Image (cartoon, rainbow, N blue to C red; front, side):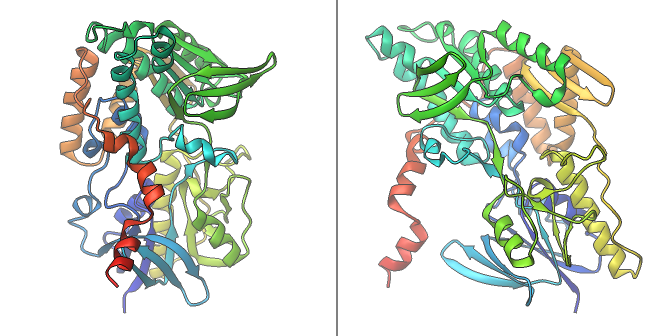
Length: 447
């Protein structure tokens, strides 16, 4: 019987681990909650009408169609029996189990609202296609509704956009909404001037892109302000509701009237991380990430690897490795290498060594910041690097070609290729929450 490898999650970690095992004598079962692989760094471009969801989310079965040792299954892993080596899965309308010899868990991260989960209804995050499409509907819908208002105060509230979190996602979202308001949409509306839109980037910390270093952080802040973005640092969000957001600064509490809020601050590990830790006796950090051994396996369970955003592993500087794509990619390849070594009877337990290829973030068209080793770039040179890197990691030739065409429309011209937004996109998540799981309801109704 071939060695059974179960991979949970089709993000960068899971996908690159599977590809690294394509010639290994193993039988792989991939379990993922969606039927697509998500290129999360470009989700903000789906939300702002530059790219379609298909360009950042190719079907898993298409990506892996030439790899014959993979069985792709849809579902969410809800429990792991580490003694009997069985994972329990909730599929759409059906529950099932899968046995494993080696388990790779790379389920990514979810949005963290720092204990204020009620904020999610009013300020969607940026972790899924559903998030991006909902935000697209809210952003473009805000301009449409503003055009219908007769009172100036109402127009201002609909034309105010607040992005919470000044990391790469928040910075990129703020820049693109500013581009929409000041470059793409002017003169398309009869009753509003989109250039009067107010875009605020809010964060409790004291710097934009604080992991990029002081010089690039300041450059990013200057570029955002040049676009018309109000950068509000050392500003903590303490309340979010339908019509506004409340913040707290050293000067006291303030309410900002706004109908469109984006949450790009904080991440936490998924529930499966906590369940794995409880089952194996492993420890977790405040964000729910699991402390792993140096080879990314769990303490006392060398057959279980935890990768990417879910793991807490110190780098050479003693600090936990960041939750970025390169950590997931490299840890996925490392786990695959450990499996192959075991099957070949070679020594394993080699420590994972992360090679930092740098950090990138766009501000607007032709403007970005890049930190690559000792090289620090900003402006157009950094933007060229950003384009090259993201094209390289987009999965599939078709995705690269169409992405380039849409970037040309948006960056060389003034258009947005993907501005279509529907009421269903804007309100479906709320309806599902009220309606409940449609598969469970259907099963109950047919009994």
